[in-house]
Length: 280
Image (cartoon, rainbow, N blue to C red; front, side, top):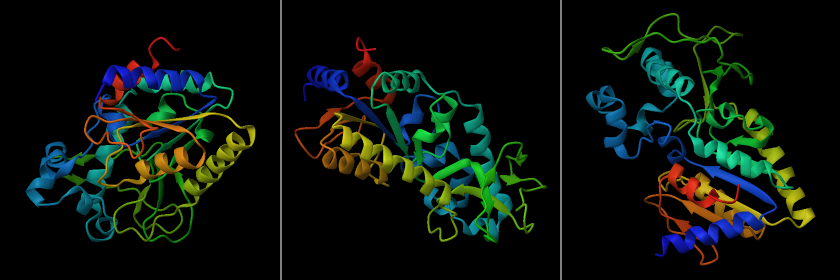
């Protein structure tokens, strides 16, 4: 693969584009210092206690713990909530935002990340789809009703040795049962989805506008793996349906389904810097 040639092709596509769709998986946060939980070993490195308990990410990221062991559930999600609050978005977020804002058709973000990093980097929250929800919002674990509320002001104290959250645990503001993050987990039938559905509605309207105006669309995908391929599938579908060009930045899963698309086998930040250099 001729990487410099692909970078030049990507730059040309971004220069000529009228609108920008940014799609992002866990690899987008790695350069900010966030774990991507790739494979059980990667997850266990981030959470040694999970290795001790013999739990993989898919097993721990399951709503049943809010019923069976809420202190364990909130140790995991409380730790992630603090981590995401403390993390600063890397430069790549700002480069793509500047690029998107320079286009007459603007930009939209579609991400499987629940960390709120795009909002923290100053992206318009009306231009973001968080397809798996957000850790910065809560819901009832039952749920007693379809309410979603902000996690602002929620601080979880964690006994790291025992990996247990300490009381008081977050509670539903309606029924008093244990609250949980408004995140789509594995084996999750209780996720309250209307916040994400509202985001998807705005996204579909934007795509319709891009189509109606005949705008040239560039899709920049960063760090979206194959284990849960939600983002990859969306990137390919939109690029195909709206005659856009997909630029896939990924150090491992960089293969693309068509020769029309561009593969950049680099990490998120490095790839973003290279394809935006000289065009901003």
